[in-house]
Image (cartoon, rainbow, N blue to C red):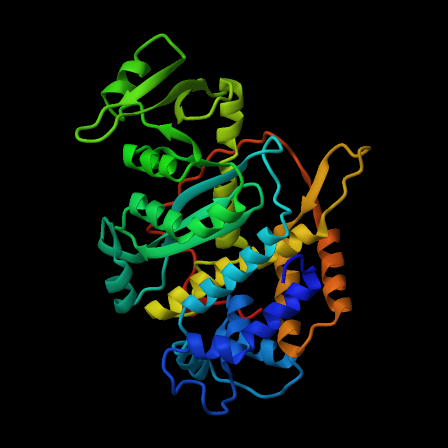
Length: 420
């Protein structure tokens, strides 16, 4: 059903999560969730959507008490039951969010014409367990084997702040190969809903095969490259020109050509950008800055949604929580977009919703979704009103020095979760 309202979509999603279709397709074995237990498949889905960041017992008590019941599920029963859910459930539900949003054709654009995409990866700290160390591998440190670390990668819509595709794998997995998976996984979405895409990539993706893949998919690109990428780039770096056409020569395949430009930062450092666009150097500098949106996204899912604060030491549990977090972030963003803040031209700054505050409001809302067969429109409207009020000013062109944390320092301790 096209052009659904947000209320219609929320109730469609609510019905879908509680359907036999989702249960039967995403339980691990046919015998799972056939008995009437204290905690159900649907309960676990909604608990994971809201994120398990406190002690598991506290989260369970709050969830069930807010649902108007005094029944208690033990943390052990919860941990055992969630292993019976296929993490692909959240990938499926996430696709429903994306289909809803893009079918409404409310996409925002760069220069009223282009949709900006980015791909980037990030290391994810995991709880310490033999299983996670074997599946995702451990980080090396001066003391020998370190903590288990996973590599996450996201294909991100910079205009609309939505994750089109997300992957998590062992920490030795190549970012380049994950890039190809993103494009394959999202080909239908890109072909049908993403208009005039420009994909913006950091220098780890400056690769002739990636450029070839982008061109085959009829996309534009802007890629920062290392000064030492190859002979042609080195020659350009050492020249006095600020822009040129570079030709990548290949054996047994057609050569590929693109623009290469020099961009000077405020620090005086020179960046080198590869592109097949016709934007001016000034515009390319501004455009590359837009890539910061995916860095902000990782900050959001790691800080506000506490992605690395896992409540499971099993591989399946980590996958469930990872994809549930991606789903939550997208659903939160679609609801935020629905608030459509109108900015007063008299104000010094434009305003946007504070996602950190909104996240706490959404957690309560998702518990209410579990309570109702059909969520009353008033509850949805009241939630959006609260979100609309949690606004902060947008201060443009701010820059921040990146703080490099030591990977050996654990952010969350499995046995020290908060109770309040």
